[in-house]
Image (tube, rainbow, N blue to C red; front, side, top):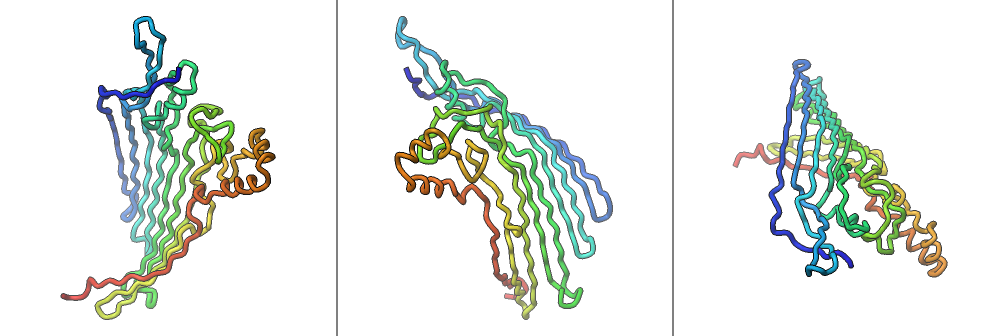
Length: 299
């Protein structure tokens, strides 16, 4: 008999234990290094569990699935930052974080697939990367600014480069993935929970601005280019391939049979659906604009 879902009015409050220690070292008159180590443990996280029961004394053994304080998660890592200011007309800041987020469940329903798929309807306790686990993240910011009255026509000029990078998040590989079918809780996984990681991303943004004083008004036209290198930053992958481009479903026995039955139109529609722009971050985006500052006007 299929397990039945229910409610639980006896859930406990989640418990969080968090530690953080930091260190700051001045390297020179205009530079400083910061190091921070952190650890966070959350207990009694809620997830669905299966329980056996009988409606009658000698009745059949039934399954009941309801939420329970069954999971825990830990996040630990180290963060580094370097700040350099007043380096002629330049300032530089850089941040890097290495962290690991692991636990037994990423959400209140992450055990549901295992509960329905397993023959004993049990939710296994496996420590695995959590859905939001991102091992490496970093930012480098280089800023060039000329104050008013300096460098002639370059006065009040500002240029900024922002480099950001991150590693990919984990996902659970699947045997196959059909964009036009039911990939529900009975779909077959391959490997352990969140045993694969999506590709990382890197992005470079550039902004340039020149300010002009017109009486008491400051006019600042600017150009802002996001994703300057037009990198194909992947945000989502198909779990059957680990690729943002194809599920490879059309090459499976089921996909081939459906293609033969429905014809070339089905194949083209499916490939168009696979070509999903939502699997990527923004392309190169150029913005032109200006700002007006009236703060010097006396009212």
